[in-house]
Image (cartoon, rainbow, N blue to C red; front, side, top):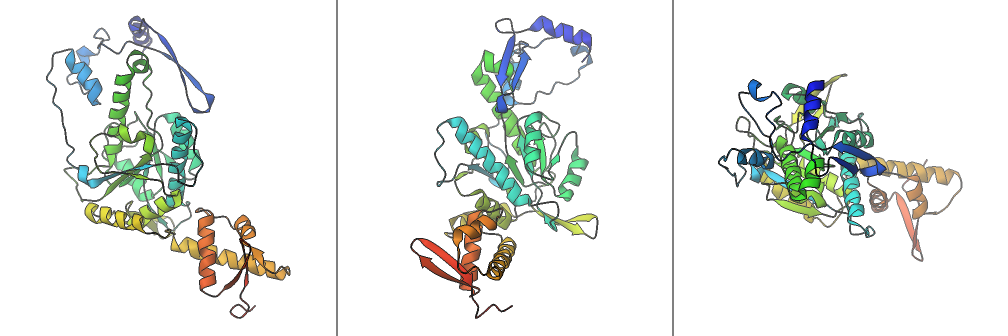
Length: 393
């Protein structure tokens, strides 16, 4: 923007309250000089260079059209609504109650990051499951990317670049009001995790909070629907959006909604077992190739309900095998140290996993069932040792 344009903008300040201070997470404060957005400004030299006007967002478009007494056309239904499953995550039943709504929201956002890390695992895996992560701002994109080691921060990629990102298979983090959120079709992706969707509206938050909420909802809906099927490419794949429960009301048009309080590890495992993301794998030393594009939306929703209804916890079998091997290695080392029976707490403290203590507990129970470990109960405590009759060194 030129200096002249900046000076012209100062002539259209919101006179009732020209400056606003907004507090963000971490104690950061942003100062905004507010322009009056209630009316379109025509003395900014844009009309002479304009052939078409495209307003992104239903609420802003309605405000603009009302200035010209324009006709409002409302779309009540979304063509691909039945392809989507909208999941709102909440803290688990075993977690302590959060005293404030803000505390509950932060717990839900942390869960989104935990789910992302559980699906992604690391850059060293042979196979990858591509997915997108939405944030509310560029600053929040930075924070989210740091919490998911190896994730890609999307900036100005277009359709071709996004296909390359999908094949790469890394989690791709983007933010509202970016190139992607405003109009790119990225229907190759089937899973979007929404970490944040509080797209800043400093003027409307002051002038009319109701309109601010509507604009944020429009922006969130536009961002989420980037992964939708399109007329040119409808493979009837299931599209899943996972977001904090507190933000579910910000998404329009999507009607198939569920709330989940399960552990993040179980939610991640359900998504992996669904194969909803599709899959890429290493092809040789440096190459990557696509080996899966997702699951049919009808079959996927049925399988989702089936997996969720299972009473037992769902664990990654490969991870479980790895944990079982680590437990046996630890127990052999304890045996060499002449330690006898080892209590569960000591094993939990020494064997850490992405899926937490439940994974270790499941692995121990499997080793006991297989006869590799012996177990005795001492009061409320369980103690474990190597079964000498099966394990010889």
